[in-house]
Each structure stands twice: as C-alpha cells, then as structure tokens.
Image (cartoon, rainbow, N blue to C red; front, top):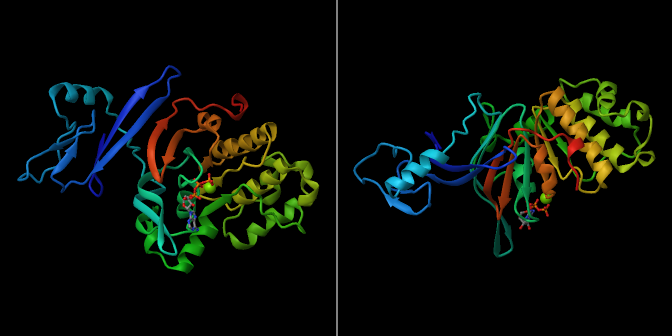
Length: 314
Ligand SMILES: Nc1ncnc2c1ncn2[C@@H]1O[C@H](COP(=O)(O)OP(=O)(O)OP(=O)(O)O)[C@@H](O)[C@H]1O
Ligand SMILES: [Mg+2]
C-alpha cells in the first residue's frame, strides 16, 4: 500500500507463492479528495468522514478482521530512486468513425532504471498502445507521461522526436532492417542520429554476431536479424529499451537466443527494458511482470528471483 500526493491512495494485496515470487494485485486508486474508499481486503466501498480532508489512514477496511488481513497483505512497492518513466491515469481511445475504441483505461505505471519489465496480455489488451505511448510514438487521450523531469504529454513534436532519437531503443516483431546495408552498416546508421552512440562493432559482438558483421539481412536467419535489430537499438545507449513481441516470429531455440541477448544487455548495460509478449513462459525472466486486460493493469508481480533465458521453455 502506498500514498501518492498526486494519485491518492493506492491499494494492493500481495501473496507469496511456493516458488518465492510475490504476486501483487492492484486493487484501485482512491483520489484523496473523494469521500469514498474501498476496503483493501474485499474491495467493497466504505465511507469515511465527509468533514475530514486528511488522507485515509491505511489500511482502510470494513471490519477489524479485514484491517488485520490488510495489514498482513499490504506491501510497499516504492522504489526509493525516482522513476525513469511514469504514467498517471493514462487512457487512450481510438476513434473509428462513430465508434470509440478504448485501448487503455486509467493506467498508472512507474518504470525504474535497470528493471526488466515483462508486459503480458491477450491480443487487443493494449500492450502495443502502452509501449508506443512510452516510446513517444503515440500520445494518450488523457493522463500524463513523464520521462525523468520531462512531461512527454506536454512536449511538442520536435521534442518528442529528440526523445525518441536520443533516449529510446525500439525492437519490434519484424526487424525493420535496411536490406541493402550489412549488419554493421545497419547499426552504424544509429551513430549518425544519436549523440551518445556506442561502437557498432562492439554492440554486435555483444549480441553474438561478431562473425556476421558483413552479412546482409537476407543472408541472416530470423534470430540473427532480430539480434542486429537489438544491437541497433542498444547502439543508441538508450535509457529505455522497448521491445514489442521480439520473439513473436521466432521458433523456440532462436527466440531463446534473442531473449538471452536482451537479458545480457539489461545486465551489462543496466538498460531499463520493457518487453511485451503474450507468451506467459517469458514472465519468469522479468524482475516485474505486469498483466494487462482490456486496457487495464490487472496484476503486478515482482519476481524475487529472475529466471535466465536458458531456464525457460515453451
Ligand atoms: N490505430 C488504431 N486505430 C484504432 N484502434 C486501434 C488502433 N491501434 C489499436 N487499436 C485498438 O486498441 C486495442 C488495443 O490494441 P493494441 O494493439 O494495443 O493491443 P495488443 O495488446 O498489442 O494486441 P496484440 O497482442 O494483438 O498485438 C485493440 O482493440 C485495437 O483494435
Ligand atoms: Mg501488439
């Protein structure tokens, strides 16, 4: 459970499973100024004094029994370091003619340096929309998105372009390499647009492609092409690496090799990594797993022990 001056009181429950990982279930955000709250245990609405403008003293509960249960299950999710990125009450509604398609509904999220966050969810649950908003490729309909001290939702287009160019690495399901350039040249292109670029050759070596530098994309396997795309993203020295289904078109051994490259980059470069997948097996690799359903965060799980790419299978 935690309080936040902007968003009010956030309520969570936590359970410990047999493998030692902790499942943290987000219940709801309670605006401070609202004269209603929810019991953190059963989520039923409870009233608190209409005359009191102080934040409710946690844990809010229907009964003393529920208060005791809340005290056992409430966890602090605060990370003392300021987040690299944050979202507050972010919603995205696509307008299709006369119809509104809600893709995200009131999403609150903080992402910290060095995290490896896996976002899971069914098709259409809003995963790509969330990632595209974090990457400055799309803007939310309502809510705020921050990158360090910058409010992306208040930024003009040139500032957003600079943000994407200098601070964000993207890896998509389809590799988007330039077919007429070699692996090395594809990665070297980044040095021309990013001011703090890493050495292209060195990054390609880090993802295990030292012997493929001069191959054209058509001369590389799918997994190798994806590793070139990862090297290209990492060459920017990004503060956040956003990966949308990076193993979506790869078979299991190749996908695992790509995940190992992402895991290594997260460890060696300390790059905050957000990975979208609908493959639940990959969740074990995350330091945190966020489940999206119908545009909402339905569950957050902290893995106290992260599985290596070698340990997972599907
Ligand atoms: N440009 C768009 N215009 C209209 N609706 C859109 C657009 N992009 C996404 N949507 C809708 O928003 C919802 C969320 O889409 P999103 O692509 O974020 O889902 P997803 O979780 O990434 O799905 P998938 O696993 O299939 O990639 C879906 O209902 C989708 O149809
Ligand atoms: Mg998607």
